[in-house]
Image (cartoon, rainbow, N blue to C red):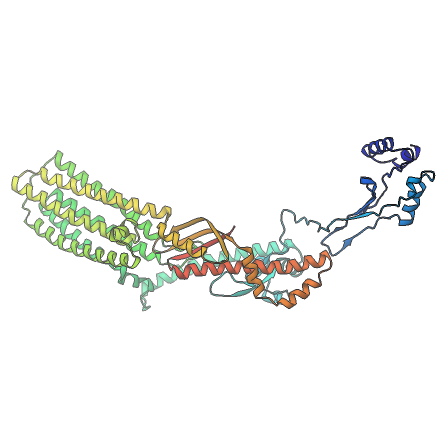
Length: 565
Protein backbone atom coordinates (compact mmCIF):
# COMPACT_ATOMS: atom_id res chain seq x y z
CA UNK A 1 0.00 0.00 0.00
CA UNK A 2 2.82 2.43 0.71
CA UNK A 3 4.33 1.89 -2.72
CA UNK A 4 0.96 2.32 -4.36
CA UNK A 5 0.23 5.48 -2.40
CA UNK A 6 3.61 6.93 -3.34
CA UNK A 7 3.07 6.09 -6.98
CA UNK A 8 -0.38 7.71 -7.15
CA UNK A 9 0.62 10.87 -5.30
CA UNK A 10 -0.24 14.03 -7.21
CA UNK A 11 -3.10 12.54 -9.26
CA UNK A 12 -6.77 13.33 -9.02
CA UNK A 13 -9.09 11.79 -6.48
CA UNK A 14 -10.56 9.54 -9.12
CA UNK A 15 -7.23 7.91 -9.81
CA UNK A 16 -6.57 7.40 -6.10
CA UNK A 17 -9.96 5.79 -5.61
CA UNK A 18 -9.36 3.44 -8.51
CA UNK A 19 -5.95 2.35 -7.16
CA UNK A 20 -7.32 1.71 -3.69
CA UNK A 21 -10.17 -0.43 -4.95
CA UNK A 22 -7.90 -2.36 -7.28
CA UNK A 23 -5.38 -2.99 -4.51
CA UNK A 24 -8.01 -4.20 -2.07
CA UNK A 25 -9.55 -6.63 -4.57
CA UNK A 26 -6.26 -8.11 -5.71
CA UNK A 27 -4.31 -10.78 -3.86
CA UNK A 28 -1.19 -9.87 -1.92
CA UNK A 29 1.02 -11.08 -4.71
CA UNK A 30 -1.00 -9.54 -7.53
CA UNK A 31 0.62 -6.72 -9.34
CA UNK A 32 -1.37 -3.47 -9.35
CA UNK A 33 -0.54 -1.70 -12.54
CA UNK A 34 -0.96 1.94 -11.68
CA UNK A 35 -0.84 5.09 -13.79
CA UNK A 36 2.29 6.43 -15.24
CA UNK A 37 2.27 9.86 -16.76
CA UNK A 38 4.71 12.08 -18.52
CA UNK A 39 2.96 15.37 -19.40
CA UNK A 40 4.63 18.05 -21.43
CA UNK A 41 3.48 21.04 -23.45
CA UNK A 42 1.63 19.18 -26.21
CA UNK A 43 2.33 15.47 -25.71
CA UNK A 44 0.53 12.97 -23.52
CA UNK A 45 1.65 9.42 -22.61
CA UNK A 46 -0.33 7.30 -20.23
CA UNK A 47 -0.49 3.63 -19.27
CA UNK A 48 -4.13 2.71 -18.94
CA UNK A 49 -5.08 0.11 -16.28
CA UNK A 50 -7.85 -1.36 -18.47
CA UNK A 51 -7.56 -5.16 -18.53
CA UNK A 52 -4.09 -4.84 -16.98
CA UNK A 53 -2.67 -3.90 -20.38
CA UNK A 54 -0.56 -0.77 -20.64
CA UNK A 55 -1.93 1.55 -23.32
CA UNK A 56 0.05 4.30 -24.98
CA UNK A 57 -1.81 7.28 -26.52
CA UNK A 58 -0.20 10.18 -28.29
CA UNK A 59 -1.90 13.31 -29.62
CA UNK A 60 -0.29 15.63 -32.14
CA UNK A 61 -1.72 19.05 -32.88
CA UNK A 62 -0.93 20.86 -36.11
CA UNK A 63 -1.44 24.44 -37.07
CA UNK A 64 -1.87 25.95 -40.51
CA UNK A 65 1.03 28.38 -39.97
CA UNK A 66 3.51 26.17 -41.88
CA UNK A 67 4.82 24.78 -38.56
CA UNK A 68 4.15 21.40 -36.99
CA UNK A 69 4.27 21.37 -33.22
CA UNK A 70 5.23 17.94 -31.90
CA UNK A 71 6.48 17.10 -28.42
CA UNK A 72 7.46 13.50 -27.98
CA UNK A 73 6.90 12.36 -24.42
CA UNK A 74 9.56 10.35 -22.67
CA UNK A 75 8.38 6.79 -23.17
CA UNK A 76 9.59 4.05 -20.90
CA UNK A 77 11.56 1.44 -22.74
CA UNK A 78 10.49 -2.14 -22.98
CA UNK A 79 13.32 -3.19 -20.68
CA UNK A 80 12.29 -0.87 -17.89
CA UNK A 81 8.69 -1.97 -18.20
CA UNK A 82 9.80 -5.60 -18.01
CA UNK A 83 11.97 -4.90 -14.97
CA UNK A 84 9.10 -3.19 -13.16
CA UNK A 85 6.79 -6.04 -14.03
CA UNK A 86 9.31 -8.66 -12.81
CA UNK A 87 10.03 -6.73 -9.65
CA UNK A 88 6.38 -6.80 -8.71
CA UNK A 89 6.19 -10.64 -8.91
CA UNK A 90 6.69 -13.05 -6.10
CA UNK A 91 9.13 -15.85 -7.10
CA UNK A 92 7.45 -18.19 -4.66
CA UNK A 93 4.25 -18.21 -6.71
CA UNK A 94 4.63 -20.79 -9.48
CA UNK A 95 1.51 -19.54 -11.31
CA UNK A 96 3.23 -16.21 -11.95
CA UNK A 97 6.41 -17.61 -13.48
CA UNK A 98 4.85 -18.02 -16.92
CA UNK A 99 3.41 -14.52 -17.07
CA UNK A 100 5.05 -12.10 -19.52
CA UNK A 101 4.74 -8.32 -19.61
CA UNK A 102 1.90 -7.41 -21.99
CA UNK A 103 2.68 -5.39 -25.12
CA UNK A 104 1.37 -1.80 -25.08
CA UNK A 105 -1.54 -0.93 -27.42
CA UNK A 106 -0.82 2.07 -29.65
CA UNK A 107 -3.74 4.55 -29.90
CA UNK A 108 -3.22 7.19 -32.57
CA UNK A 109 -5.33 10.33 -32.82
CA UNK A 110 -5.83 11.98 -36.22
CA UNK A 111 -4.07 15.26 -36.79
CA UNK A 112 -6.30 18.31 -37.02
CA UNK A 113 -5.66 21.83 -38.28
CA UNK A 114 -5.85 24.62 -35.81
CA UNK A 115 -8.86 26.87 -36.48
CA UNK A 116 -8.03 30.37 -37.64
CA UNK A 117 -9.63 33.36 -36.01
CA UNK A 118 -10.49 35.86 -38.78
CA UNK A 119 -12.17 38.33 -36.48
CA UNK A 120 -15.27 40.39 -37.24
CA UNK A 121 -13.71 42.17 -40.24
CA UNK A 122 -11.34 40.38 -42.61
CA UNK A 123 -10.59 41.95 -45.98
CA UNK A 124 -7.07 40.79 -46.79
CA UNK A 125 -8.24 38.33 -49.46
CA UNK A 126 -10.74 40.73 -51.10
CA UNK A 127 -10.38 41.60 -54.79
CA UNK A 128 -10.97 45.10 -56.19
CA UNK A 129 -10.85 46.39 -59.75
CA UNK A 130 -8.33 48.87 -61.06
CA UNK A 131 -10.92 51.66 -61.34
CA UNK A 132 -11.99 51.19 -57.75
CA UNK A 133 -8.37 51.09 -56.59
CA UNK A 134 -7.68 54.42 -58.28
CA UNK A 135 -10.88 56.03 -56.97
CA UNK A 136 -10.79 54.82 -53.36
CA UNK A 137 -7.03 54.83 -52.77
CA UNK A 138 -6.07 57.77 -55.02
CA UNK A 139 -3.59 55.78 -57.11
CA UNK A 140 -2.45 56.17 -60.71
CA UNK A 141 -2.35 53.44 -63.37
CA UNK A 142 1.45 53.45 -63.09
CA UNK A 143 1.14 52.67 -59.37
CA UNK A 144 -0.86 49.52 -60.16
CA UNK A 145 1.61 48.15 -62.71
CA UNK A 146 3.99 46.41 -60.24
CA UNK A 147 1.15 44.82 -58.26
CA UNK A 148 0.00 41.25 -58.71
CA UNK A 149 -2.67 40.96 -61.43
CA UNK A 150 -5.30 38.26 -61.08
CA UNK A 151 -7.68 37.22 -63.86
CA UNK A 152 -11.20 36.52 -62.61
CA UNK A 153 -14.47 35.49 -64.21
CA UNK A 154 -16.42 38.55 -65.30
CA UNK A 155 -19.94 39.16 -63.91
CA UNK A 156 -20.96 40.82 -67.21
CA UNK A 157 -22.26 39.00 -70.26
CA UNK A 158 -20.18 40.94 -72.78
CA UNK A 159 -16.77 40.04 -71.29
CA UNK A 160 -15.37 36.66 -70.25
CA UNK A 161 -12.78 37.75 -67.67
CA UNK A 162 -11.20 40.86 -66.22
CA UNK A 163 -8.21 41.85 -64.09
CA UNK A 164 -8.43 42.47 -60.34
CA UNK A 165 -5.97 43.23 -57.55
CA UNK A 166 -5.67 42.07 -53.96
CA UNK A 167 -7.03 44.72 -51.65
CA UNK A 168 -4.15 44.20 -49.21
CA UNK A 169 -1.63 44.88 -51.99
CA UNK A 170 -3.47 48.04 -53.03
CA UNK A 171 -3.66 49.30 -49.44
CA UNK A 172 0.05 48.70 -48.95
CA UNK A 173 0.86 50.52 -52.18
CA UNK A 174 -1.40 53.44 -51.25
CA UNK A 175 0.30 53.84 -47.88
CA UNK A 176 3.66 53.67 -49.65
CA UNK A 177 2.61 56.42 -52.11
CA UNK A 178 0.82 58.78 -49.69
CA UNK A 179 2.67 58.01 -46.48
CA UNK A 180 -0.23 57.26 -44.11
CA UNK A 181 -3.97 56.35 -44.09
CA UNK A 182 -4.77 59.87 -42.88
CA UNK A 183 -3.13 61.36 -45.96
CA UNK A 184 -5.18 59.03 -48.18
CA UNK A 185 -8.37 60.15 -46.43
CA UNK A 186 -7.51 63.83 -46.93
CA UNK A 187 -6.75 63.30 -50.61
CA UNK A 188 -9.99 61.34 -51.11
CA UNK A 189 -12.00 64.13 -49.47
CA UNK A 190 -10.31 66.73 -51.64
CA UNK A 191 -11.07 64.79 -54.82
CA UNK A 192 -14.70 64.36 -53.74
CA UNK A 193 -15.06 68.12 -53.40
CA UNK A 194 -13.52 68.61 -56.83
CA UNK A 195 -15.92 66.06 -58.31
CA UNK A 196 -18.93 67.89 -56.83
CA UNK A 197 -17.67 71.19 -58.20
CA UNK A 198 -17.12 69.58 -61.62
CA UNK A 199 -20.70 68.22 -61.71
CA UNK A 200 -22.11 71.61 -60.78
CA UNK A 201 -20.07 73.27 -63.50
CA UNK A 202 -21.18 70.64 -66.03
CA UNK A 203 -24.82 71.17 -65.12
CA UNK A 204 -24.40 74.93 -65.51
CA UNK A 205 -22.75 74.51 -68.93
CA UNK A 206 -25.51 72.19 -70.13
CA UNK A 207 -28.12 74.72 -69.08
CA UNK A 208 -26.33 77.50 -70.94
CA UNK A 209 -25.95 75.31 -74.02
CA UNK A 210 -29.66 74.51 -73.96
CA UNK A 211 -30.54 78.21 -73.77
CA UNK A 212 -28.14 78.92 -76.63
CA UNK A 213 -29.77 76.28 -78.83
CA UNK A 214 -33.24 77.56 -78.03
CA UNK A 215 -32.19 81.09 -78.98
CA UNK A 216 -30.29 80.35 -82.23
CA UNK A 217 -31.95 77.11 -83.21
CA UNK A 218 -30.27 73.86 -84.11
CA UNK A 219 -29.83 71.70 -87.18
CA UNK A 220 -29.22 68.57 -85.14
CA UNK A 221 -31.13 65.51 -86.47
CA UNK A 222 -34.23 64.36 -84.66
CA UNK A 223 -33.59 62.58 -81.38
CA UNK A 224 -33.86 58.80 -81.41
CA UNK A 225 -36.58 58.93 -78.75
CA UNK A 226 -38.92 60.63 -81.22
CA UNK A 227 -39.00 57.46 -83.33
CA UNK A 228 -41.07 55.72 -80.66
CA UNK A 229 -44.00 58.00 -81.56
CA UNK A 230 -44.05 56.73 -85.13
CA UNK A 231 -45.09 53.17 -84.28
CA UNK A 232 -46.71 51.07 -81.59
CA UNK A 233 -48.16 52.72 -78.47
CA UNK A 234 -46.46 56.04 -79.25
CA UNK A 235 -48.30 56.28 -82.55
CA UNK A 236 -51.64 55.51 -80.89
CA UNK A 237 -51.07 58.19 -78.25
CA UNK A 238 -50.08 60.87 -80.77
CA UNK A 239 -53.14 60.18 -82.95
CA UNK A 240 -55.36 60.40 -79.85
CA UNK A 241 -53.80 63.71 -78.78
CA UNK A 242 -54.48 65.33 -82.16
CA UNK A 243 -58.06 64.09 -82.48
CA UNK A 244 -59.07 64.82 -78.88
CA UNK A 245 -57.58 68.30 -79.11
CA UNK A 246 -59.71 69.10 -82.14
CA UNK A 247 -62.79 67.56 -80.49
CA UNK A 248 -62.30 69.71 -77.41
CA UNK A 249 -62.14 72.88 -79.50
CA UNK A 250 -65.33 72.18 -81.45
CA UNK A 251 -67.27 70.86 -78.43
CA UNK A 252 -66.35 73.97 -76.49
CA UNK A 253 -67.74 76.13 -79.32
CA UNK A 254 -70.95 74.06 -79.34
CA UNK A 255 -71.37 74.46 -75.58
CA UNK A 256 -70.89 78.25 -75.82
CA UNK A 257 -73.50 78.39 -78.57
CA UNK A 258 -76.11 76.05 -77.01
CA UNK A 259 -75.40 76.13 -73.28
CA UNK A 260 -76.08 72.37 -73.06
CA UNK A 261 -74.87 70.62 -69.90
CA UNK A 262 -74.22 67.43 -71.85
CA UNK A 263 -72.14 69.34 -74.39
CA UNK A 264 -70.15 70.95 -71.58
CA UNK A 265 -69.48 67.48 -70.14
CA UNK A 266 -68.29 66.27 -73.54
CA UNK A 267 -66.01 69.30 -73.91
CA UNK A 268 -64.51 68.64 -70.47
CA UNK A 269 -64.21 64.97 -71.39
CA UNK A 270 -62.19 65.78 -74.53
CA UNK A 271 -60.00 68.23 -72.61
CA UNK A 272 -59.27 65.60 -69.94
CA UNK A 273 -58.44 63.04 -72.63
CA UNK A 274 -56.08 65.45 -74.37
CA UNK A 275 -54.20 66.32 -71.15
CA UNK A 276 -53.99 62.72 -70.04
CA UNK A 277 -52.69 61.52 -73.38
CA UNK A 278 -50.08 64.27 -73.36
CA UNK A 279 -49.03 62.91 -69.98
CA UNK A 280 -48.87 59.42 -71.52
CA UNK A 281 -46.58 60.72 -74.26
CA UNK A 282 -44.27 62.12 -71.59
CA UNK A 283 -44.27 58.77 -69.80
CA UNK A 284 -43.42 56.91 -73.03
CA UNK A 285 -40.52 59.29 -73.71
CA UNK A 286 -39.17 58.85 -70.18
CA UNK A 287 -39.53 55.05 -70.19
CA UNK A 288 -36.96 54.57 -72.97
CA UNK A 289 -34.18 56.33 -71.08
CA UNK A 290 -30.98 54.35 -70.56
CA UNK A 291 -30.53 52.88 -67.05
CA UNK A 292 -28.08 54.74 -64.85
CA UNK A 293 -26.43 53.99 -61.47
CA UNK A 294 -29.34 55.62 -59.66
CA UNK A 295 -31.90 53.54 -61.58
CA UNK A 296 -30.21 50.22 -62.47
CA UNK A 297 -33.43 48.61 -63.75
CA UNK A 298 -34.30 51.50 -66.04
CA UNK A 299 -37.36 53.76 -66.26
CA UNK A 300 -39.92 51.31 -67.63
CA UNK A 301 -42.41 52.03 -64.84
CA UNK A 302 -42.77 55.62 -66.02
CA UNK A 303 -45.51 54.42 -68.37
CA UNK A 304 -47.46 52.95 -65.47
CA UNK A 305 -46.92 56.07 -63.38
CA UNK A 306 -48.17 58.28 -66.23
CA UNK A 307 -51.20 56.01 -66.73
CA UNK A 308 -51.97 56.08 -63.01
CA UNK A 309 -51.82 59.88 -62.92
CA UNK A 310 -53.98 59.91 -66.04
CA UNK A 311 -56.61 57.79 -64.30
CA UNK A 312 -56.61 60.11 -61.31
CA UNK A 313 -56.88 63.10 -63.67
CA UNK A 314 -59.88 61.61 -65.46
CA UNK A 315 -61.60 61.03 -62.13
CA UNK A 316 -60.96 64.52 -60.75
CA UNK A 317 -61.20 66.62 -63.91
CA UNK A 318 -63.66 64.68 -66.04
CA UNK A 319 -65.97 63.01 -63.56
CA UNK A 320 -65.92 65.83 -61.03
CA UNK A 321 -66.77 68.64 -63.45
CA UNK A 322 -69.39 66.54 -65.26
CA UNK A 323 -71.14 65.68 -62.00
CA UNK A 324 -70.93 69.27 -60.83
CA UNK A 325 -72.42 70.64 -64.05
CA UNK A 326 -75.14 67.99 -64.10
CA UNK A 327 -76.16 68.65 -60.50
CA UNK A 328 -76.25 72.38 -61.14
CA UNK A 329 -78.48 71.74 -64.19
CA UNK A 330 -80.89 69.72 -62.05
CA UNK A 331 -81.01 72.38 -59.37
CA UNK A 332 -81.21 75.37 -61.73
CA UNK A 333 -82.57 74.26 -65.13
CA UNK A 334 -82.16 76.74 -67.96
CA UNK A 335 -83.75 76.87 -71.43
CA UNK A 336 -81.76 75.21 -74.21
CA UNK A 337 -80.99 76.78 -77.58
CA UNK A 338 -81.04 74.92 -80.88
CA UNK A 339 -79.11 71.61 -80.87
CA UNK A 340 -78.40 71.57 -84.60
CA UNK A 341 -74.75 72.56 -84.35
CA UNK A 342 -74.34 70.37 -81.29
CA UNK A 343 -75.59 67.34 -83.24
CA UNK A 344 -73.20 68.04 -86.07
CA UNK A 345 -70.24 68.36 -83.74
CA UNK A 346 -71.22 65.21 -81.84
CA UNK A 347 -71.43 63.31 -85.13
CA UNK A 348 -67.98 64.45 -86.11
CA UNK A 349 -66.69 63.61 -82.66
CA UNK A 350 -68.21 60.15 -82.90
CA UNK A 351 -66.38 59.48 -86.16
CA UNK A 352 -63.03 60.78 -84.91
CA UNK A 353 -63.22 59.01 -81.54
CA UNK A 354 -64.26 55.82 -83.29
CA UNK A 355 -61.24 56.05 -85.59
CA UNK A 356 -58.90 56.48 -82.64
CA UNK A 357 -60.59 53.56 -80.89
CA UNK A 358 -60.02 51.33 -83.94
CA UNK A 359 -56.32 52.27 -83.99
CA UNK A 360 -55.99 51.32 -80.31
CA UNK A 361 -57.91 48.04 -80.79
CA UNK A 362 -55.74 46.99 -83.74
CA UNK A 363 -52.54 47.75 -81.79
CA UNK A 364 -53.70 45.72 -78.79
CA UNK A 365 -54.75 42.79 -80.96
CA UNK A 366 -51.37 42.72 -82.67
CA UNK A 367 -49.49 42.87 -79.35
CA UNK A 368 -51.74 40.25 -77.73
CA UNK A 369 -51.24 37.89 -80.67
CA UNK A 370 -47.47 38.26 -80.36
CA UNK A 371 -47.64 37.35 -76.65
CA UNK A 372 -50.03 34.46 -77.16
CA UNK A 373 -52.77 36.12 -75.08
CA UNK A 374 -56.36 36.93 -75.75
CA UNK A 375 -57.55 40.51 -76.19
CA UNK A 376 -59.26 40.48 -72.80
CA UNK A 377 -56.22 39.02 -70.95
CA UNK A 378 -53.91 41.58 -72.52
CA UNK A 379 -56.11 44.46 -71.40
CA UNK A 380 -56.76 43.13 -67.88
CA UNK A 381 -53.07 42.43 -67.24
CA UNK A 382 -52.21 45.97 -68.44
CA UNK A 383 -49.35 44.75 -70.61
CA UNK A 384 -49.24 48.09 -72.42
CA UNK A 385 -50.57 50.80 -70.08
CA UNK A 386 -50.38 53.62 -72.63
CA UNK A 387 -52.48 51.83 -75.24
CA UNK A 388 -54.87 50.65 -72.53
CA UNK A 389 -55.51 54.23 -71.44
CA UNK A 390 -56.23 55.30 -75.03
CA UNK A 391 -58.52 52.29 -75.51
CA UNK A 392 -60.53 52.96 -72.36
CA UNK A 393 -60.72 56.71 -72.92
CA UNK A 394 -61.86 56.37 -76.53
CA UNK A 395 -64.37 53.67 -75.66
CA UNK A 396 -65.75 55.95 -72.94
CA UNK A 397 -65.74 58.83 -75.43
CA UNK A 398 -67.79 56.90 -77.98
CA UNK A 399 -70.29 55.80 -75.32
CA UNK A 400 -70.32 59.33 -73.89
CA UNK A 401 -71.10 60.87 -77.28
CA UNK A 402 -73.97 58.43 -77.80
CA UNK A 403 -75.26 59.09 -74.28
CA UNK A 404 -75.03 62.87 -74.68
CA UNK A 405 -76.76 62.76 -78.08
CA UNK A 406 -79.57 60.62 -76.66
CA UNK A 407 -80.17 62.93 -73.70
CA UNK A 408 -80.04 66.02 -75.92
CA UNK A 409 -82.56 64.39 -78.25
CA UNK A 410 -84.94 63.72 -75.36
CA UNK A 411 -84.60 67.33 -74.29
CA UNK A 412 -85.36 68.51 -77.83
CA UNK A 413 -88.47 66.29 -78.06
CA UNK A 414 -89.87 67.01 -74.61
CA UNK A 415 -88.48 70.47 -73.98
CA UNK A 416 -87.42 69.34 -70.48
CA UNK A 417 -83.77 70.32 -69.68
CA UNK A 418 -83.58 67.69 -66.93
CA UNK A 419 -82.75 64.98 -69.50
CA UNK A 420 -79.72 66.98 -70.59
CA UNK A 421 -78.53 67.26 -66.97
CA UNK A 422 -79.03 63.52 -66.52
CA UNK A 423 -76.83 62.99 -69.58
CA UNK A 424 -74.09 65.04 -67.91
CA UNK A 425 -74.33 62.86 -64.80
CA UNK A 426 -74.17 59.72 -66.96
CA UNK A 427 -71.02 60.88 -68.73
CA UNK A 428 -69.44 61.70 -65.36
CA UNK A 429 -70.30 58.24 -64.03
CA UNK A 430 -68.82 56.63 -67.15
CA UNK A 431 -65.59 58.58 -66.71
CA UNK A 432 -65.46 57.57 -63.03
CA UNK A 433 -65.71 53.88 -63.95
CA UNK A 434 -62.91 54.23 -66.52
CA UNK A 435 -60.69 56.07 -64.05
CA UNK A 436 -61.28 53.41 -61.37
CA UNK A 437 -60.23 50.66 -63.81
CA UNK A 438 -57.06 52.51 -64.84
CA UNK A 439 -56.10 53.25 -61.23
CA UNK A 440 -56.57 49.60 -60.23
CA UNK A 441 -54.65 48.01 -63.13
CA UNK A 442 -51.71 50.43 -62.98
CA UNK A 443 -51.48 50.17 -59.19
CA UNK A 444 -51.27 46.39 -59.48
CA UNK A 445 -48.51 46.72 -62.06
CA UNK A 446 -46.50 49.18 -59.95
CA UNK A 447 -46.77 47.04 -56.81
CA UNK A 448 -45.14 44.14 -58.65
CA UNK A 449 -47.23 41.16 -59.63
CA UNK A 450 -46.17 37.67 -60.58
CA UNK A 451 -46.23 36.40 -64.12
CA UNK A 452 -48.59 33.64 -65.19
CA UNK A 453 -48.17 30.27 -63.38
CA UNK A 454 -47.60 28.52 -66.71
CA UNK A 455 -44.63 30.76 -67.44
CA UNK A 456 -43.21 30.20 -63.94
CA UNK A 457 -43.52 26.44 -64.33
CA UNK A 458 -41.76 26.57 -67.69
CA UNK A 459 -38.82 28.43 -66.16
CA UNK A 460 -38.61 26.00 -63.24
CA UNK A 461 -38.63 22.99 -65.56
CA UNK A 462 -35.84 24.50 -67.62
CA UNK A 463 -33.66 24.82 -64.50
CA UNK A 464 -34.55 21.43 -63.01
CA UNK A 465 -33.72 19.66 -66.27
CA UNK A 466 -30.09 20.72 -65.92
CA UNK A 467 -27.85 17.94 -64.49
CA UNK A 468 -26.08 20.35 -62.11
CA UNK A 469 -29.35 21.30 -60.36
CA UNK A 470 -30.97 19.17 -57.69
CA UNK A 471 -33.93 21.36 -56.71
CA UNK A 472 -35.37 24.87 -57.06
CA UNK A 473 -36.81 26.75 -54.08
CA UNK A 474 -38.34 30.15 -53.28
CA UNK A 475 -39.14 31.11 -56.87
CA UNK A 476 -40.21 34.72 -57.52
CA UNK A 477 -40.97 35.87 -61.07
CA UNK A 478 -42.08 39.51 -61.13
CA UNK A 479 -43.52 41.34 -64.11
CA UNK A 480 -41.64 44.64 -64.34
CA UNK A 481 -43.81 45.88 -67.18
CA UNK A 482 -43.27 46.36 -70.91
CA UNK A 483 -42.29 42.73 -71.55
CA UNK A 484 -39.64 42.66 -68.83
CA UNK A 485 -39.53 39.94 -66.18
CA UNK A 486 -37.29 39.64 -63.15
CA UNK A 487 -36.66 36.03 -62.05
CA UNK A 488 -35.26 35.05 -58.65
CA UNK A 489 -34.77 31.54 -57.22
CA UNK A 490 -32.64 29.59 -54.74
CA UNK A 491 -30.86 26.71 -56.45
CA UNK A 492 -29.66 23.52 -54.75
CA UNK A 493 -26.66 22.46 -56.86
CA UNK A 494 -25.32 18.92 -57.11
CA UNK A 495 -21.77 19.24 -55.78
CA UNK A 496 -20.70 15.96 -57.37
CA UNK A 497 -21.69 17.08 -60.85
CA UNK A 498 -19.94 20.42 -60.40
CA UNK A 499 -16.79 18.68 -59.12
CA UNK A 500 -16.90 16.24 -62.03
CA UNK A 501 -17.16 19.15 -64.47
CA UNK A 502 -14.09 20.64 -62.82
CA UNK A 503 -12.16 17.38 -63.05
CA UNK A 504 -12.99 17.02 -66.74
CA UNK A 505 -11.07 20.25 -67.40
CA UNK A 506 -8.00 19.27 -65.33
CA UNK A 507 -4.84 17.29 -66.08
CA UNK A 508 -5.55 14.12 -64.09
CA UNK A 509 -1.92 12.90 -64.18
CA UNK A 510 -0.69 16.19 -62.73
CA UNK A 511 -3.38 16.12 -60.07
CA UNK A 512 -2.40 12.57 -59.08
CA UNK A 513 1.20 13.69 -58.70
CA UNK A 514 0.05 16.51 -56.45
CA UNK A 515 -1.91 14.00 -54.36
CA UNK A 516 1.15 11.74 -53.96
CA UNK A 517 3.18 14.72 -52.78
CA UNK A 518 0.76 15.37 -49.91
CA UNK A 519 2.61 14.18 -46.80
CA UNK A 520 1.79 16.70 -44.08
CA UNK A 521 -1.29 18.64 -43.03
CA UNK A 522 0.30 21.74 -44.55
CA UNK A 523 0.54 20.02 -47.95
CA UNK A 524 -3.08 18.90 -47.64
CA UNK A 525 -4.21 22.42 -46.81
CA UNK A 526 -2.38 23.89 -49.80
CA UNK A 527 -3.86 21.23 -52.11
CA UNK A 528 -7.42 21.75 -50.88
CA UNK A 529 -7.20 25.55 -50.97
CA UNK A 530 -6.01 25.51 -54.56
CA UNK A 531 -8.64 23.16 -55.95
CA UNK A 532 -11.39 24.33 -53.59
CA UNK A 533 -11.14 27.87 -54.91
CA UNK A 534 -11.21 26.58 -58.49
CA UNK A 535 -14.33 24.51 -57.77
CA UNK A 536 -16.07 27.59 -56.35
CA UNK A 537 -15.19 29.44 -59.57
CA UNK A 538 -16.66 26.54 -61.52
CA UNK A 539 -19.86 26.83 -59.48
CA UNK A 540 -20.06 30.54 -60.31
CA UNK A 541 -19.58 29.73 -63.99
CA UNK A 542 -22.47 27.27 -63.78
CA UNK A 543 -24.68 29.99 -62.29
CA UNK A 544 -23.78 32.32 -65.17
CA UNK A 545 -24.52 29.59 -67.69
CA UNK A 546 -27.97 28.91 -66.22
CA UNK A 547 -28.81 32.63 -66.21
CA UNK A 548 -27.75 32.91 -69.85
CA UNK A 549 -29.86 29.88 -70.82
CA UNK A 550 -32.91 31.37 -69.10
CA UNK A 551 -32.55 34.64 -70.99
CA UNK A 552 -32.02 32.92 -74.34
CA UNK A 553 -35.02 30.61 -74.00
CA UNK A 554 -37.24 33.36 -72.53
CA UNK A 555 -36.46 36.79 -74.06
CA UNK A 556 -38.86 38.52 -71.67
CA UNK A 557 -36.63 37.53 -68.73
CA UNK A 558 -34.22 40.46 -68.46
CA UNK A 559 -32.91 40.16 -64.88
CA UNK A 560 -32.04 36.77 -63.30
CA UNK A 561 -30.92 36.31 -59.68
CA UNK A 562 -29.94 32.72 -58.85
CA UNK A 563 -28.88 32.21 -55.24
CA UNK A 564 -26.89 29.14 -54.19
CA UNK A 565 -28.72 27.19 -51.51
